[in-house]
Image (cartoon, rainbow, N blue to C red; front, side, top):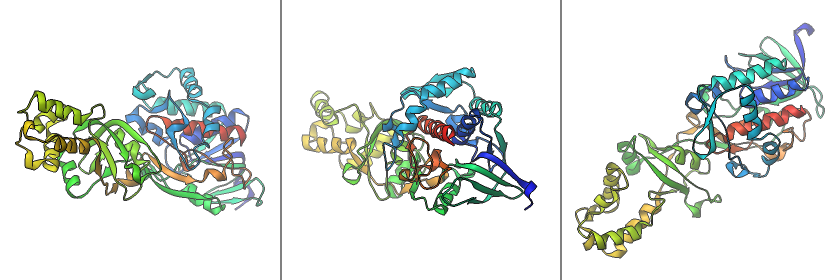
Length: 409
């Protein structure tokens, strides 16, 4: 390739999503000459589709406990140096109307396009160049052990002092997700931790799967956890649970999926606010002729109650509470409070909102996101082994990690 086909930049950012855009505009504001390379035909596709088109762009209640990582302390530096309040200030600077929903979630009043346009305006003002439909064929380090990279695309070769990898991970491949970041990390000898789909619905087979199919569309508030004896994470979540044709979804299932591992049972509490055993025994005294399904239907949807009856007390379906023993009622109550069910799996990366795992944080500086072994090489956003809970936390990690790299690269 002739010399005139080579273009020099201070920084090349591979990936034009949330983290890449934040990194680029931050570096551009420092006077760095920045190029964003995006393989798809549009910048910021995930931003546009997030939050049902309203973009849950951050959360008022960001804490390190909202993140899952092999090193739970790694995210602290970036999140403290570029907080939710910093991003909210940027949103307000651009006069984008937004509102708070439950659990501190912030959404645009109108459209996700406002967040993307805000980032593009900031990039333009910082003289950031953006090239779409630009597929990277190869990346090489100019001199091993020193900074400087050559990025070859089909028609061009780009040289840069610093290279920032912001290509995301494996979730939602129809949006262009690939394992590019992981392959590049491995090319440079950087450890990548095992990945799996996170924030994703559970699927079931057998009787539970058939039950979920019959209940598709039913939603209840519940508490869900991985069975404690099977998990090193003592995490439980309370939110809406949605039965689907394939299994369980809704916020509570999505949250737990990031902590779930294959062949591990989960426990469902259908009455998170209630001492069910005491409720049953009190009803036995005060309403002796009532059927158990009639009592439970006062709280749970009737369709769900009938399914539970078929599973748990079909032989006593027509027996009034006065004819139940206290031990039998307590046994049913215990099952409804800690109902163990075994997922067949999850829907996988096809519908997952995030990828759990990724580039090992032990390989990176928590302050700058730079590789400890390869000067000038940075990994940010979802590619790194930092996964947020549902509710704007993954966007905040994108903003914070992108800003950290943009301040340093």
